[in-house]
Image 1 (cartoon, rainbow, N blue to C red):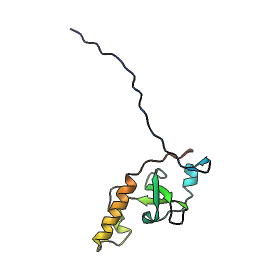
Image 2: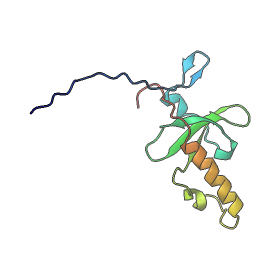
Image 3: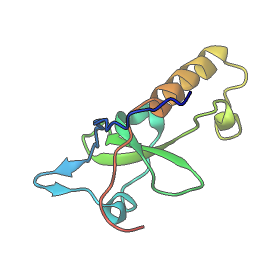
Image 4: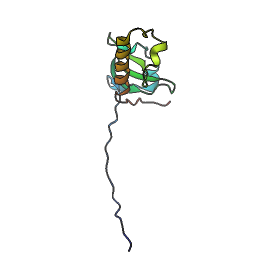
Length: 113
């Protein structure tokens, strides 16, 4: 006895986020020119793929300027950069910042790599 299956087409939806300044989309080359600030100073809009060797988020600095910040998705990799070993509350705060940054939505930048 043979069985037959019916082929069907499913329509799925996806959301693509872009960052627009005025009426122009922020490009990869524009993003590479932004200042890099400390993650704690940034109101994060989302993750961006700028360089393969590091993880960045883009957002507004405390002064309202568009900026980048590096984050560590696996946590605790910043211990060598910041002397926070003797302060567990600071380590927990950094862990929370990095977890939030890693969980932010991906923003697609226009332009060629």
